[in-house]
Image (cartoon, rainbow, N blue to C red; front, side, top):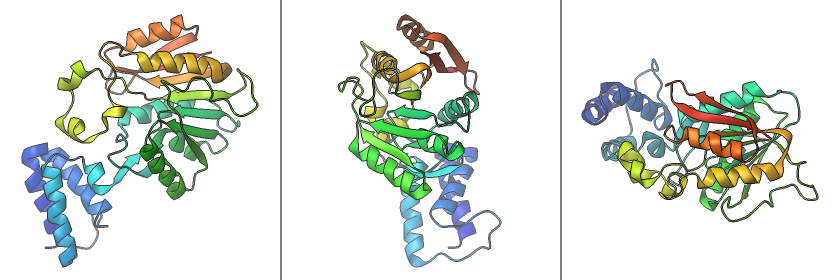
Length: 285
């Protein structure tokens, strides 16, 4: 089997499952990220080990496993990041949140940025890559996620700090040592869990079967729990005039706007993603 044979075979095998367009995209990612073959490269024979790997890869993909977990790589805002089943696969709408933060704040100032629920580290790493003067920190409750984030920082040679913190339980002790409230972070960003179990039917089988529930779901009776905790915490550790950016569920966007307004934030502004869905909010302390 050659690389071109494998490319066509991937499309043929995956099209009934994914559709022709997505099957072609997945085939390209597999060839690039696993077999080092890019479009217009010279065709080559696969080794016996590579052929065995190819069949195993096809079977995993046909079973519904996301291609990013199969390859171990996810592209995010110009970075190639390692992802494992311990972290969410970064989404395009989170790239839009990153873009908003970058465009909304000065590039060359030494801003202090905190990402709550960092997962793979995609948000602070993308911010640091584009605005090197910023001091970026990511926190997460999952040690496995933090291991992934630190590996990504090392691989990308980006100076981003990562630490364990439980947003729901650890209180407001996020301030740098020796600093008082109001002297901490200039920007806080978060893409927290926001999906109540009743919305499972709106999600793909692949996401439900393979991505970490810890990073997806919130209690049915209190779907805004993370926004309430994050909003209160940000009031403690943001500088005066500091900005809070959050990604939201399109179905409770208005409720999050109202919650942040009630918490005393000003200029609470919603933003649509490229699909026209209300998915992002900025609020000023």
